[in-house]
Amino acid sequence: MTLEELVACDNAAQKMQTVSAAVEELLVAAQRQDRLTVGVYESAKLMNVDPDSVVLCLLAIDEEEEDDIALQIHFTLIQSFCCDNDIDIVRVSGMQRLAQLLGEPAETQGTAEARDLHCLLVTVSRGGWPHPAQAPGPVFVNKVELAGLAPAQHSATIGMSRGPPAGASFPRGAILSWPVFPRGALGDGGFLPTPGAPTEPPLFTPSQNPHTDAWKSHGLVEVASYCEESRGNNQWVPYISLQER
Image: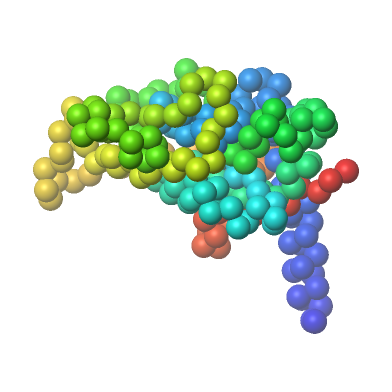
């Protein structure tokens, strides 16, 4: 290995440590300020209702869970949703460290009482920046529940988020499907845009995300910068590892 390669590896390792520390700082601060949504179902529900309040999505999984097909399907759908809605997204390993950061009781870890830490959303208040009226965003649909409905019930359910009531655990076998209407498919007023008509520029791009201005946080700025840098290297879902301490 050449000197240049050694320096590059050392810089990459140092960068990973910096970003990992920033993620830990951000999660602790977000939970303290009630800006953290925990759980796959809870996250999907929030993104259906208010995707513009989400600044960062963390998908957490350890190596022994990589073969969980249902969880990987959820991750794929959430990743696509985040990319379509300019939400920074990071894959994370180190579930034990994550549980420590969020104050999960040791006796509940790995039990039915433990919170689902596989998906975490960091949110911000939208009151500090303007937000134009938009057509309804995409909606996740629970295919498992739809499969058991009669045709009349099915038609009435399409476009609605179906899932367990508040406080219920998310059924791992349920599958969140693609939205009925992709976000941005409807123009102003809910009508389809005229073919050939110029499209309006986006309110913001990932590198100009107003969320980072709405809530000043060193950890948030560091993670957002890392995500932008990764996109520049054609890595749309960067990965970090949280080390147990």
